[in-house]
Image (cartoon, rainbow over all chains, first blue to last red; front, side, top):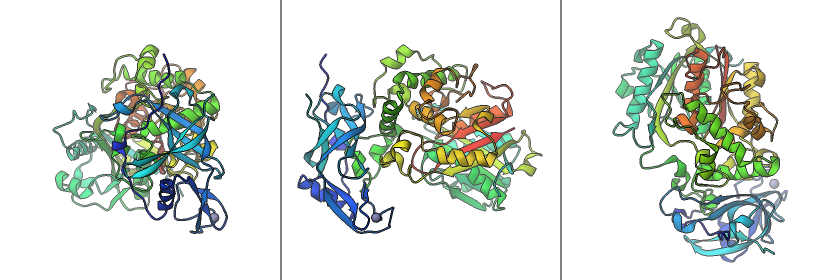
Length: 146
Length: 387
Ligand SMILES: [Zn+2]
């Protein structure tokens, strides 16, 4: 039996919310730019963006354009619904993505559009964008399989 | 100065465990009140003796409980922050109040009633915040979906398998079979396990704890006062809560350093707990390990030093945690996976019964019992009780 293609989670469970610390990430997303929050003083990346650098307590951030690539650090295949409204989006793959050129930071996201049995830890992935997803533009990740 | 051996649990009360929603039409306050009255009766104390409440996960409305139970005056009412991580630590909060002179007789109570909102999908109902957008967009609809990411990383790093997770679930189910209070009393076979729906691979249905209703209360007082009460005192040897920054918000963060990501986040609390109790893992006779997810049982066994990091899967599969013949029997009542889920208070209850020597699956000669609170965002917590 051919493996199922990884879908997207249900948009109905998503509620947008931002504040001044996360807004630049989502503003860049609208332009399909994956950016990372880097401390303007010491350079350390942090994800998600928070008010202080934990290393030097600077509040100044540089929003750095990232290459949009990374590797799957961990993942989970959601294959069964635990509540109504999930069935149409199964299976989907939740994933933690270790981002290239962003220190040791990781993004909580999804791997999409490839067979779920091809997803593994260490898989190289690149960002793609879902526009108008519950009012925001959401980064997700996919892979070129050979 | 520590709280070591200065207080004791002297009363224990519980409602029956109900399948999700089946405690209705009783209200949540009613369940809480029933458990408190039962615990006071067990201790031989009355509502007039109570002068403190120590909660976790935000607790309950102390004023409401005083109003309905007729508790005349309270001098202490506090809760640990966080969620189910604090269940074992609430007893330490009570001990801290008593040792510092802020209260004499403190109620610790936990309860849940899952009517409209199931805990399995609770994160999907959190208010939208700038922080949780990152995981709600990804479809991480419940804690079991989030902890699955830690479980997968553990498999990648250490070679842990779904067979190991199955052995956790089967081990704990075996203990429920003989417990009349347990909700799941049918044997769980490996075939059943592997046929179950994969809710969040590698977690299947049997890796998730039960969704149940119920309330459990314990009464804590000073070691001196405990001597004259109805029940043999269960000594509070240590209770610790907190955790490391590198664990922090854990499943809501997912940026923990690699050596901590695939863990339960309990190592700092375990170190402080053993130091306070002045015991080692090998001294513990029975352990009640917070089992919201089978994978997290394996990671807690590692964090509490019962085996090396990465060895938790083979350790469980070797039978080391079995009630019959295991070196460290765990979740002897059937745990939250198979007996009942009351935010970790079931584990406190079972540890008290083991130390009293009245447990259904009694570990012969049990003198030291470990209880852990739920791996979650800081604080997590632990408790060591003694005879
Ligand atoms: Zn800095």
